[in-house]
Length: 232
Image (cartoon, rainbow, N blue to C red):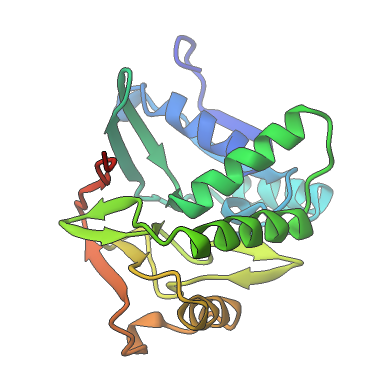
């Protein structure tokens, strides 16, 4: 698609597949960039559901044909992440980016998937619990968010964050791609605070109404997040 003159690119897979294709398409000048559509073929399929497609691939394909005939297109604003590691990292994301907890859990799920193990919503929860237990015994903030020490951060471009057993999960249910990014970060790993966050996500409750000062929320087009320096 980056070299040939395509009008449409369709993916069949999960959100990771869609995200890789989106990053590839962003290398094409906007005036030559093809329309992108994603059909559900993964676990959560957040992006395709947000676009209004059924979680059933066959039904979603029929819905896509209907949308193409009617020329129903949506202009979706993307989030952007840049980082300095061994080399400079530049990535776009359609609906969310996890730093800290979520990133580490998803990495472990990818390792399990590539080793031939089955991954599921239940497996994701097991990995999350293991990480939280580990952090409870070593409560040292891992990240620096605009000068504030935090343990992990959820960055949302749209809602929901994900789906768990078909149920939408979102720490920031009013995140929209045509506005600034929404960032939720935790400054504590106390069990009561984490359970409060988990409950808010399960019921898609707007965390902005939570007066808990141990969480940090930003709504910004630019947020600086870095790793905390290691102690000697």
